[in-house]
Image 1 (tube, helix red, strand yellow):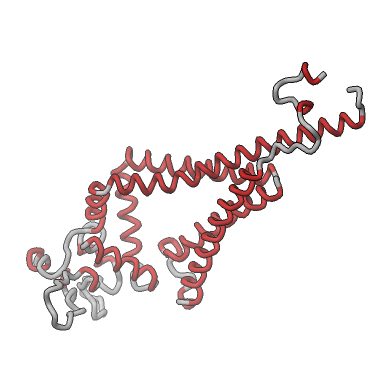
Image 2 (tube, rainbow, N blue to C red; image 1 turned 90 degrees about the vertical axis):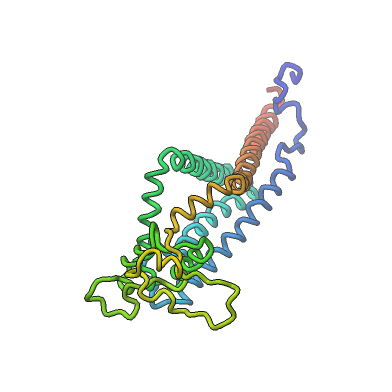
Length: 286
């Protein structure tokens, strides 16, 4: 008898009843569809930057190429959100579980990276320094990478990873005697101190030979502090802003995990109801 069944027993519902909420189902679909479009845009931009803009260097310096990083993130995001879209529309538990597990793993990895970065801040700083120095080595090999480094040095008012002499690691700016480059012992123009009160033509060669100039004299022309220290100081000054950004990235992930778990639970209840109804039709006295 129905009265002897549990509160959530399938026998308490009509055959036309559905546990799957259209609100949860289509909200999850819209959520994934929006991020799927963002992933498509990231892939398109990455392909354009990697192939169309400089096809001749398509295999150069993949490890520090911003376009390649954008492509990798875009592809991963495309796969995950595609599974979320199809899984929510088709009410497919396997796709929804893959979507939910993927988001959970990404969230936990981000959390672990933040905690480990805080605990092992010195090692993390050394690793970032190595990455920046590696990017400096390939400065002239990739226009996107060059623009990214120039943008960072201008925005933070810095030069090199730890100091402006780090530019000697680049083959064009190397300060050895046998370097035939016209930029020998120089630093990029983005290292230069540009004062806005001057109206004359800016000297784009202001970084010429700055690596062999005395530190005091060089500091009057270029930024001599490394970008790592500048970025660390900026982080310490903007902890609340960075916390808000981190929270803004975490909330969509948690919302996606919550909605997918709700929909998976509803689909399972619906399958149980359907199985009960099939058994009830086969054996009405059951």
